[in-house]
Image 1 (cartoon, helix red, strand yellow):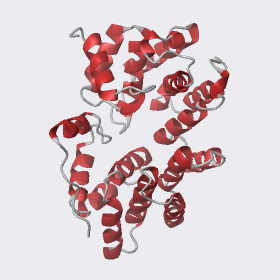
Image 2 (cartoon, rainbow, N blue to C red):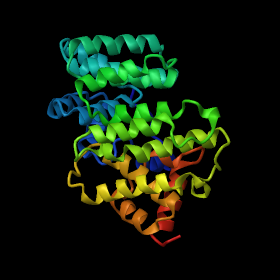
Image 3 (cartoon, one colour):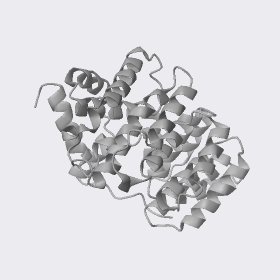
Length: 316
């Protein structure tokens, strides 16, 4: 059985804490720490407690699967409980993460996801794993079909919508700026289809950031997003204002991935030059920075986040 992963150096550990995929889910942080030591029972209890809260389940399984030895501990769990669908789903997503790191064959990860999907037909999480694989290492031909499989099980799946936006933003990268690009239509459609209290209302902002990433990488926009006119057009301003106004009225602060949205919105407000609005978002975000979109197009996300936050809060 593999040993727990070695401890990180002080600098890497500090960065990992700030860019922690678990965000502010303290129960997830505890279960992940136990899993890293081979104590899978905490992950078992966490996923039982999570139930069919599909956004939270997807978030928690994905973060647990990031642990380097999660697949080994998931197999241990399956030896103890061969009928555990939670163990099967965790194993599948762990193999997905290994495949994304080049440590596992994608076809083997796909097979595990499909096996898990057959065991628990109502769960969108194995299909999320397949979508993650297709997004990163697939040819893209099955992206729409896999997204439809997720939506058939949970129409407002947060992570799946973000993956689709990122994928769509990459189409026709060499065509340059296009205010009518399909990613904007998709994001607007998804936001309109979602319930009034859904964080998918922020998806048009995410689409704007993802399209900037693609355009900057192709040389159509400057590498400094704050220097780009991408954020200053009339359509962009309308999107940012609508998203910020929605956030001010949003009363559901318990969504497991809401901090992802707040980072996208804070980034947009920084690029737009709206320091006071960005400051309000940074206060709510605290230390829970996310790699996207602060890394766009090719920046150190932690440095970019801290510089933007310091400027917004007037402490630069």
